[in-house]
Image (cartoon, rainbow, N blue to C red; front, side):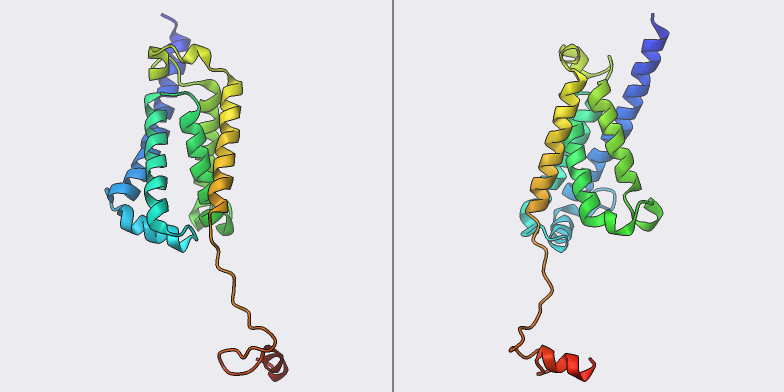
Length: 194
């Protein structure tokens, strides 16, 4: 028995179960409302608020992506596909929710998202270890770090595609000839010191 290999595989299993289980439960909160989660209705409202409209279309996709990615990671299945899906959802979350609040999690920043991403990149490149479905079905020997990086690029592309679907509302500006709510044109408002 190779004790170093056993310890390595046990550490990879613990990392996978923690990361994958957390992400899958996060998605289940969005999908089913478990553990005080918002459910699909609340998730749809959140997606609308973030500019992903109609939220009713985006909510089940986001929830299913998190559940699927987390389950693949926890089971050690399909190599870097789960980590790439995680990368995609975390990048969208960072851009739409956390980045304006800075880095640290205590202020609502993206610290935790960054930790999820880094662990996913390690798993995508290192593999899931011997205690995994990939090992059971012989996929582990066929995967190389290059596959992890190709999948990560796919995850970034998916995040950019998702962000391109976002409809951010531009502030309404009155035209120079169109009166604003108080009846004055913008030129008159500037002149009045408002």
